[in-house]
Structure formats: structure tokens, C-alpha cells
Image 1 (tube, rainbow, N blue to C red):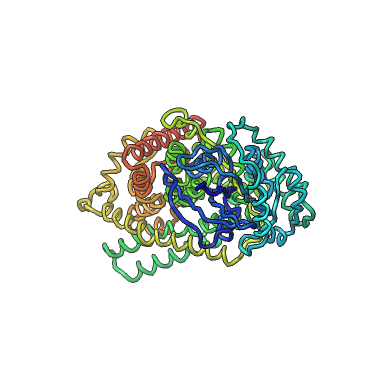
Image 2: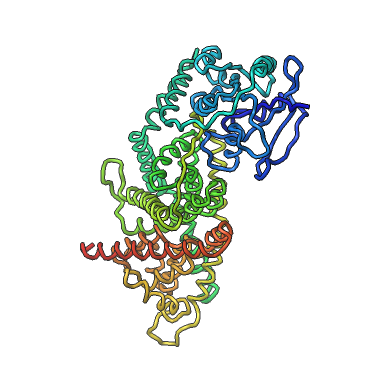
Length: 619
């Protein structure tokens, strides 16, 4: 008995292939894996218009025949007749999204060029019409040279017509397997796809034309990059300009709480614990909650409007120049919130060396935990003045710190790809969502979630680290009448004194050396550690107790030391949680230790160069 004709459904991800497969086959489906690979094989029985049975197979979605993952390799090998245990299809049904036609036609043109009997299913035409786009399937068929059937898979529209076309197509002579075609220029295929898509448009609303016009600027390699930098610049200006009032309110509440405890309790360990350890320590970090929420407000807005994907497209070109896959953008973007989810998101990167490189540079993205450190130093040492109308110097410095982290990550990636993670990297294609107004409730919910996460960290990791540090700073007590300060005599002070031998050449003092130890638990703890140190150092001196942490730092640190401290935190070794996640994702300690080592060297060199240069210029 001869085998049934084999028809393959193929197309980009999110084109509606699975919905079309389910509508055509109903319950006549079976699942399994392709021989030799753990990629799901989904096959079913389809009855043509003339009653003939056909085997239909749903291939994994892909953007190109240049495979970059096991799923994409299966799709390429099946349509080329190379997959072990699988014969070449007798016909292809290429499923394209009608509302995103120019992107989907790129892959369709590659498949049509193979010469197999082919039908194009112009799917989701109802959604395209809803969005103001009407297409002519007959024009599209003429341009492509193959039948084009308009379908709405979820409503089973166009399926009878599709079966009729398949019946006629499978009645022709079976094709011979073709040799691989020479690789076509990507830009040429893209331009041809755009031309065909434009030719098929019957009607398009002004809003869609406006989107295309905006994208001509937003996706331009020069103007688009300038727009992205401009948005980031405005974001960091707002972090300072909008946060002054709420920060002052939180500082006032913390000061009132500290005064209430001082008035209610006699001098002793309990009062010191509550004021120096809890209120001044943890409160010095909580005060930066408004700045963190402003930062995430902009990030959530950019995501909700659809612009963030455009930013990914722009950054893809930059990352390709340093040997990174475009798939690395989303993990790196996630690392701006926290490196832990960013490192976990690298699981979507198929190439192991691409993935390892992305894991190793994810900590260089400026996570939100660094913001309190940046904010307290910038607030203390950088004047709150405008360098241009509406452009604050403090926001500009913060912008430069974030950009420095990105540039540092790209340079490290380039070096890694040339040495320890050497290998070829591939680009990727992405879908561009339509622009839309953000929903206020989604923005509010996102900000609420970020606030809860930050306050939980303040109530757990930061609180615990601060309490431990307070204990180490409070014991042992110096002898009565001793000229040695409590901090110098304490366990923590002695540890910091030993560490400062290593860090003193780059301009760091005892207090910085002390703050870097608990900062391994969480970056923000560096701020609470400094606040605790200076609170204990102040003792009962009312004048010192009333001064803010920034004022104390400004009095005790020279400017070169402050700048070196900022440079250190651009590259500083990661918190313990990030190291643990890296160990889990790389299945060993080799790469986490390598990551900590190279970050320490980078941080030390960057801080040293900053300190020595600033000192040389007399700052």
C-alpha cells in the first residue's frame, strides 16, 4: 500500500499554523518526536475536497531556512528532504499573518524558491481588516506565482477552498528533490517581500500609515538610535527631577521615627539597634523607592506602547558587531531590573557559546539595585544645577553611568567572543507589534509589583544584612576612656582595615571597604552599611545625627574617591544570589568564579583609573 501524500504546514511563529492544523485535522492527530531529536512531531489526517486522505504535518515555526535552533533545524531538514525517518513533503502550505505580511513573506519567498508544490494561506485576514488593512489575495498570488487562499483558522473560514486547491495541486506530478539553493542576500529578499506586500494592499487606514512613518524614524540606524538615546536621557533626568519631593517626605518620616525612638528609649543597645541599625540603615535604602519607581514607570511605558521591541531591533545591529546573537537582547534588557531573571532568560538562546557570553555579561547591565548607590553619591557630590536649559547635571551623570555599563558589556562580549567563547553568532528576526496607548491599570499594577519586590528586599535581605553589620560594628566595646572609635575597635572595623590594604591604592577608605562586604548580599546594602557606620560613629552628637548620609559623605570623602566608588559599582562583582543562579545555569563553579574574577579586576582597574585621573587633574 502506497503512503499517503504528505503536506507540511510551515511558516513563521505566531502565524496561526497550529490553529489551522487543528481546524483541518480535528481529532485525527497524533504526537511524537522526530527520530534522533527531542522536537515534537505533530501529524494528522486531512480529507481533501475529492475525499482523498492526506497526511498533514505541522512543522515548528521559524523565520528562515538558516536554522539557529533544534526546532528550526527540523523544519529546514523536513522541507529539504534531509530529516532522518521523514520523507520530503509532496506539497507545502505556507501560513502567513495577513497583518504582518512583509515580515512573513521573507520566509515564504525562501520556501517558494524550493520549487515544491505550494499554497499560501493568508491567515487572520479578519484581524488585518479590524486593524484597517485590506489585502487582495489575487494580486498576492500573481506576485508570488502560487495560489493564495484567505483564511481565518479559528473560525474555519477558507478551509474548503484550501482543500480544493490542495486536491488540484496533489494531482500534479510529484516533484523531484532539489539541490540546496544558493543563499540569497537578506536585504534583497526583505526588499522584495516589502514590494509584494505593498502591491497586495487594497486599502490601509491612516493609523497604519502613521505607524509605518513613525517606524521609518524609530527603526532608522542613525535617527532611531538618537531617539533611543534621547528617551533614555529624559528618563534619567526625570529620575532626579520628579523624585525630590517624595524623597524629602520619606526622609522626614525616617527622621521623625528616629527622634521618637530617641525620646522614648534611654541610651543603650536597644535604642542603638532601632535607630542606627533599622531606621538609619534600612531607611537609607527605602528613601530611594521613588527613583526606582520613576525608572520602572518609563520602562513599563516603553514596553506597553510597543517601542521596546523597536529598541531591541536597533540594539540587535550593535550586538551583532560584538559577536552577540540578537536573541541576547531580551535577557540583557531583563538584567536592567535584576541580573537573576536576565540570566535565567538566556535559556531561549540555542547556541551554547552565545548563551554563555550573555550570562557572563548580564551583570554589567545596570540593575535597579545599583540605583540607590548611584543616587546617594551623585546627590552628595554632583551639584544640582542645569548644564543646559532643562538638562540637569545629576541626571546627565546617571545617564553616563548607565551608558558606561552598556559599553562595558559590549566590549567584554567582543573580547569573550574572540577568546573563551569564540564561535560564530547568528542574528534573528522579530515581530513588530503595533503602537498602542498603555492601559493605566497595567502601569499601576507593574509599579505596585516593583514596589512590593523592593520593600520585601528591604525587609529581608537588606534588614538582615544591616542587623548583622550593626552587631559586628557594636562589638566589642572599646575600653573606657579609649581614644579608639567604636567602629575602628569593632569586629567589622578590623575586617575592613585588613581589606582596605588592598583597596586603599584606588582611593577607597575604611568605610568603603566595610560597605563592600555586606554589599555581596545585595547592592543596596552598601548604602545602608554606610548609613549604619556613620550613625554609630556619630554616637550622641546631635549635630551629626541630624545630618543626612549625603552630607556626611561629602564632608569625609574627597571627590576622586566618590568618583572611584561610582566606577567600581559599574563593574562590581555580583551579589551572592546572582552567583548562585550562574552556577545553576552553567552546571558548575568554573564560569561563576570566572565571572566574579573578571568583574573584580574590571571594577578595580576602573576605580583605580578614575581615582588616579581625578587626582592628577586636581579634582
